[in-house]
Image 1 (cartoon, rainbow, N blue to C red):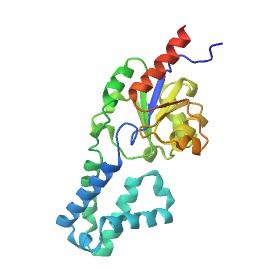
Image 2 (image 1 turned 45 degrees about the vertical axis):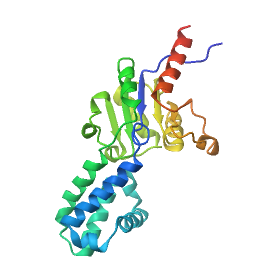
Image 3 (image 1 turned 180 degrees about the horizontal axis):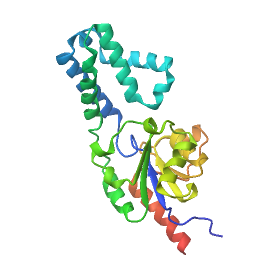
Length: 240
């Protein structure tokens, strides 16, 4: 008996490390921010390093875990503290953050992403759900997404079911008619499945974390080509 489902009505994506690599971008953004500090806030640059600023942010996050919802606000608060400790004008923090966010959004999508989004666009509704601070408008991809839900604006982060359900509601689809695609086994796959969506693990690195955490994705793919193949197989088998 055929138990496979038809093509979903909507596909929602995680952003960082699903559509583009983020670690090298953050490192470069922090370097550009620190270069800006050397020129425009030298007292901060003399007193701190990239590493000590990062450590201070981690300590601040431990004291105020609510910042986990918006790491941009955490970075801003960390810079305000650093400027005050260094006796630097805290009014410059806004300019410093503008430098950081410009660099943080200078991402380069994986080669398969744009062709994949274009292939999906005429077949399903496309949305995104992210715990990060990527700005799809700045990046130049917002026109591909009908809905984009960010934890920082919504007030709840993955893996909470509420953020997945809110995105489905905005798209006008039931959770069971949606597929979520992300790179994090717990936040993305387990979170989406517990909200009633099917979940595809975008495993670009060949990781085996799903076995470690006893998570069973509905599919495991390494890129958009494999995602499209899986969707097509599901769809064609249902039709047949």
